[in-house]
Image (cartoon, rainbow, N blue to C red; front, side, top):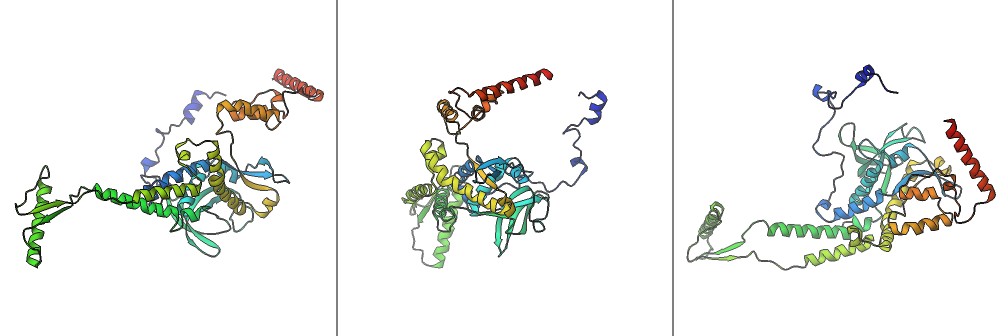
Length: 415
């Protein structure tokens, strides 16, 4: 119903015109130039190619749906449970992150630190006072101290606008360890060795491009006494001052002095070691260069999902099921499961044949195929039937379809 002119004027609000709280010096929290809850990589990972590998894995894990589900007696998926935990995993994890951004943050933190804490921040009841709680918001935390039954975690507090250290019981915090810990996070693992080699390469590059001349000045006298050494040091300083103060970097020397330049390339096998460690890391993680640049074929992507993505997802899902679902809930066949869309990598040219096989073998209905293609469902009742459309429908099915069509038609006429 349209509002009257008086009602529209009374309830009108503009974000720029009516936002006067800040101008009234209201305390709205700590302000920062950079986003304070954003994940920062440690141990020099942000200066190497490791960041791209971490980011690729985290994005691929976050694209897979994780849901709070109900199973049947054979542990098969039945339906999605609309709970606060499912809302955190699919829609909104906290005031700053969506469900997908939260999972990506979980994976990035886990790969970087080796272990990450999943913290239920807002719940409907205190976790230690009730066996069953409703999780409203979640955040990731860095584990900085371990105790027998508790952990100290550092997490972003969105009410104070900064990271705080809190001690929580292990029973209410999901602790996910990197399945590739021995490859990526051990002090002498392949990844750590590669990072050290990359840091050495960066140091050599900075040294070679620092602008130093690397000169040796041969003076016409023997430098053995303190007086001669002071005299040589004075002479070196004079040449430095000449080069710094000259517009074109020109200096003069005595005819008896000899200058030798040393900034010549030095051969080493550092680059070959980096290439070897990179290929070894890729093989141990189940990653290839074609996966990173997007040219991998179906077999390579299947191997990547089975060897790299699936272990990480299983570690996250199993820990959530163990910590965030009570024993009673698990007895009632509640669980946390992940679902990967197998049709994302299928080209359009193959979808027609796949759709025909899936509908003909009564695996998917026509409307389910239309949903995969991004087309709205059909109103035809037969589009929701799980049967082979190439065969004639049974007589009773035809009668049911006709009755449904008549009910729909009568409903439209009554409206």
